[in-house]
Amino acid sequence: MDAARAEIVEQSLMRCLKHDAARKEFMDAFYDEFLASDPRIRAKFVKTHMHRQKEMLRAGLVRLIMFASGSASGRATVDDLAKLHSRNYFNIEPDMYDQWLRSLLTCVRQYDRQFDSALEKLWIELFTEGIAVMKKAY
Image (cartoon, rainbow, N blue to C red; front, side):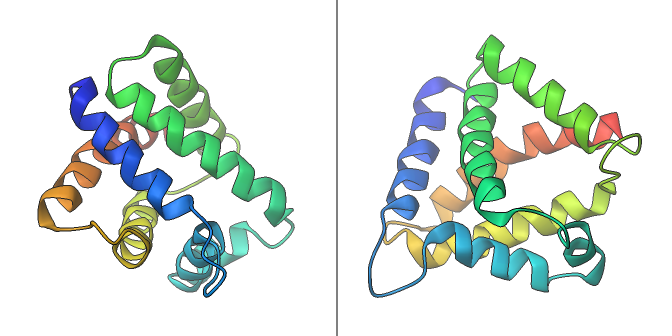
């Protein structure tokens, strides 16, 4: 993905992350959605410090955007994340990434007022690249 299109996704993410006092924060909404999506996923987070997890996710989303735009540091981070999430460490099964993306898109749809089908396609294209690396490392 070219840097200009990755920037559009990053701007969308930043709109999602802007706190609106009238509703939950984006990361809280995402984890509520994601953890409710599958009992296997919920079980992976039983002993997780969720405040720290949300900070790591936020950083990880930015790194995935960097990876998709061709950044070497983004690539290194995705490779590291893939190793950590492989069967040898966190044992995140490949189908869980599909649920992760569905949950993410559900929340982006709710939190980004500029969300439309074209933006959805960019989100899918961008994150599918990083997810492919994660699945391959399993």
